[in-house]
Image (cartoon, rainbow, N blue to C red):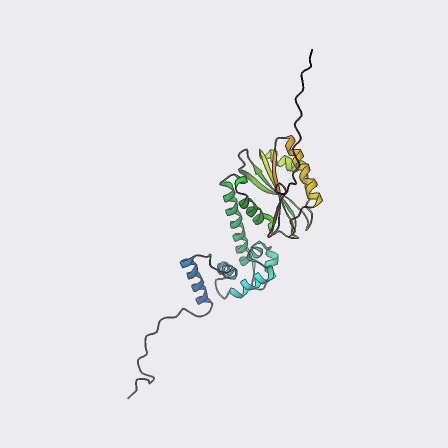
Length: 256
């Protein structure tokens, strides 16, 4: 005869627990997003969730945390070059291509926001978009936004690529591109990889030359923005735009 606490005694029904290990963690993380959205995820959780798509098995949390530690932020991970990403153990072409696709999706989303309204009434969106384009680049890039007569975006393009502290800019080429696109206005943008958004003497001189050349052809340069990962500098807001030429007084008729 067996007692009630013997090995053959009926066991109480237990609630089924989530599976242990990486698979259980993946299910729980996905369930959180389905039930509550992704807003509450920490950066490493969002990154490991993205990596699920490239690495269908295993624990991606250690890799996500290593990437954040190495590059410093989620945005820096997403904008890192494939070559730099591949230096981290566990990152291969499939994983890096997925992250680059996410980066490009973010760029296109930001661009669509700009296309919906006049740029000059959504300045925060302009700055955010420019930061997604070149704010995290390791070398300087000169970027152009072309506007129509209603100050809406016609198109944008990366005009020049330079070094860590210099980008060659040719005034004639900038004006030519504006004419090619039929632009009535321009916004000039370039990044400072150093993190200091302050303009150099060369930045100021180059801006003056472009503004002067554009004015002669009826093209208005609305601003020149210097972008870093976390900061920006507006030439117009800081009073660095040259004043338009003073109007000549009308001629007085000669008395006879």
